[in-house]
Length: 361
Image (cartoon, helix red, strand yellow):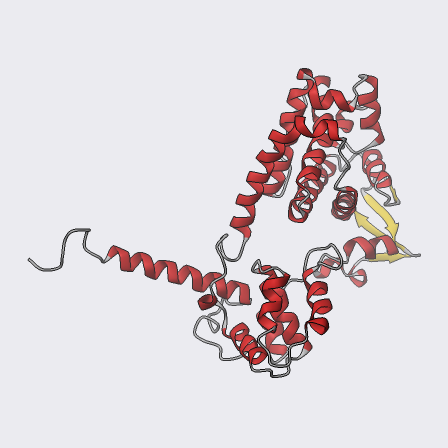
């Protein structure tokens, strides 16, 4: 049994065999003092994924270190499952998948490991000592579809007899996507009720970190949305809706996706459309919930960038912020204007005399 490989890829059957050989039960992971390092490492896995987008490397000096690394993986999954937040699940899945990709790249001359990992993730492939991997073009299309750079277009790759020939490093990037999808599809796990009290403190630690991470990632910096920072295009679309003017589908999509990303829930978004004189909620509900992801259980759509807004005829009354060279997205506009307002406020406060003093003598 390769215990190093089991620790680097703790989702493999080999990892389960390693744990079974030590006669460890799930209850032991939750309660045993001997497995406290595994629980601490499990927390660390989640927090690193949340904060850095990657589970960081940990030295695996001996079989004890490797066992703790293997056991930390199911514990991390338990914590993510107990929080059961879509953003956390996706962020955790990405963090684990990026770590796996780096581990595969470290093993790039070990074709056996690469094909073992990809095979257990459902990605069939063939490889040889030259470092070239062959995979079905259908699998390539499925896994490369979300990668936008030109190098991932099928036409820009070596395709022969229905197989795509790739360098190992490039193949590993696709395996990363497969692993990320696997984790997202498996979580949340059902945790036995008797285990829940034992993990409560660690779950609360993750929840606290999640609140901070969401605030940092939010376009509003974790604050409530302020209409004075809205870009001209969004303001104009809102005005059109309020006046009962017919919004094109692209305009409705832009409004809903923008406000959803800004943190408004369904009630907040529907309230914007309800200002229209001919508002009919029954006609709007499905469209809104589809765009926000409430119908599908997935993340909502990303708002269109400035280039798309211009193409769709939705760029209205651009101001000097819009016309700056670095402006490419309505969300960027909001952040920029919010930052400018904060700088103006600081300058204004800095120009005031200290409390209790006036400008005269």
